[in-house]
Length: 386
Image (tube, rainbow, N blue to C red; front, side):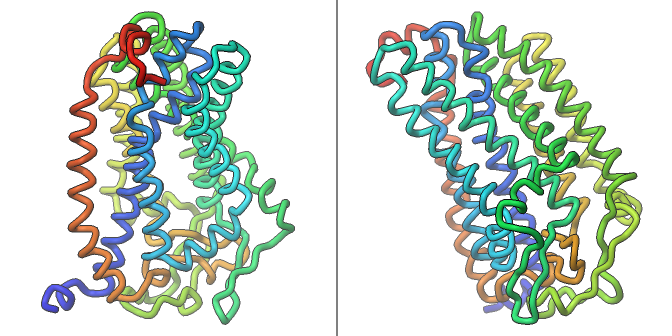
């Protein structure tokens, strides 16, 4: 109970905001290269052997990487119930599309090599492409919409109501700024996948991956800079008006929120957060240079740094907002008014402190065991390859 008293409600809220960011970044760093490899598959593999080679670089690890996605969804459900309820109801069709694309991956992995018919295998190769490219694109589109504000409002009973029709909400997500952030997300994860293929393969597959990854890396850098400029001059930010209550009850309607000049005002208030976008740009620039020069491990690490910086920059720029509302700013969800109870957050933190190290140790062990390049001999001489 002493620890429970030391970890006040506001401290636990910030801890769980950080943990949510860790889980989302962990998902992007691990399953991100799986999606990138899937999106590259039809282009880096010209023969069936080359495509099998590409698939087998991620085949043994993709299921473990999805753990981060599951943990992120679970954390949102348990630590931030209003966020889970509002986002899942508003982004329902988008999330259904993501899940449908992700479901294609395991089916394609299992069924692709069951028949030797070229048309059969080609169809499943394109299914893997969809399973990689579509989620990467939609995740970025979602971020773009969150930065602009989502058209929802909360009733006094804390039920959420969305503006527009059910299908209109989905197509409304596909606005110009959100499509730009979607392209940045897709290009960033394709670059990450190219860095992974550069490390895990050799020969024509690795060469093509480096060429495509260089192009998508440049697209990522240019798109990220353009999105930052757009955010600075074309999109209003949000701010809590008056005193900020950090340890009050979880009811967003208790706070007054107003639109401000720009999200980038956060950098004037907290200059140290500029490190995040700088790391994002630095990581991607060095990843592109690494792909061009043929470096392997360092390129993957730089790519991870770029993803870490890019995702962190969004969270730090928006803090304390998690899901702002464009039609009812007072309904916006923040770190201070959208969490579970103090006791719930504490119990979850204890459980996380026990099991998170185990997950990290197991993940590190798996990658250690599977370290090394995948060769044609590995897939043609093994009955366990994809």
